[in-house]
Length: 342
Image (cartoon, rainbow, N blue to C red; front, side, top):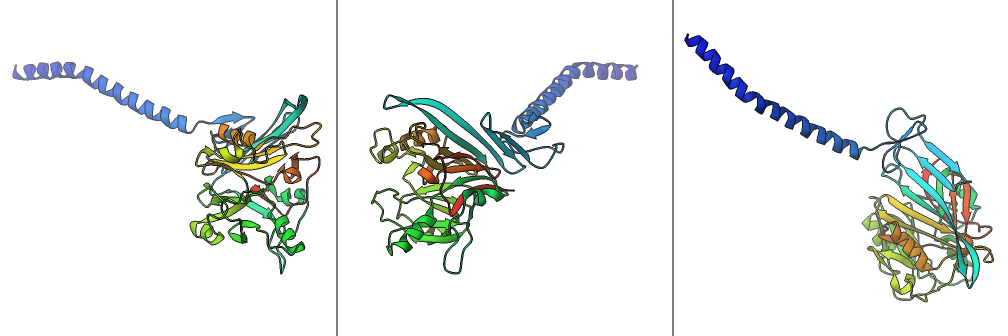
């Protein structure tokens, strides 16, 4: 009898515990499902023609058709490149604007780049000689761009070096560092603002970029901080998230005319924006003011951005082919900003 009573009591306890066990199991399932959903969101994958991309545009997964994705759609103005550690999307834009009551075309290309420690920003340049640094001599931009996936014109420092030599002058070239090597270290005194003012944009090993005014730092100081590249031109467009209102704001009169432009900026480390604007012949293309350029970088969320040499220097190449020139033709160049070795 006692055994029967014990079994009945045990049965009753189990009946009372079952709802709690079921609830605990449901709670456990719910927590696990939430975690999995969160992980899936972080690893969101987009599929296109059998290729798989994460939110930054990098290739992911083991079943892609190849190791690199290349799209060249010139008719629609879209170029794309992706590997597991580099993603580039270039888009061409065209709009009609009025300049002094006349209609012009504003044409520009914006490159959005997600780089990485494995595929960082670097530069290409003409070879050094016994007496001259790399980038001093000039070459066709298509030759410089032939070995990289994306190339953008830079600060044209080689031309300033040549001009100093030809005119036997002591003009400043700017603080110039390329791939960890000093190629120029004489700059303007901070506060002397003529074009180019030689403001700098430094690129560091952690993928970050930082604007400095001309004269704020020496080449040696940049290297000591870990800078791998320093570009010198200007004026600076955005610094610490703020637009240069004095020289690139809507009310600025600092060289406020429409021109072909080239510039580069950073959203966050390893996330960059490059812009090249067509501006000639002026009877057809509008070009832009510096304030337009600064606002466009802010629109993309850039916290640092520098105006580079424009006019006949401005150009952008994708997979070795020109996709936009500032003018109808482009100058010979000594160096270019680059992403992705072919």
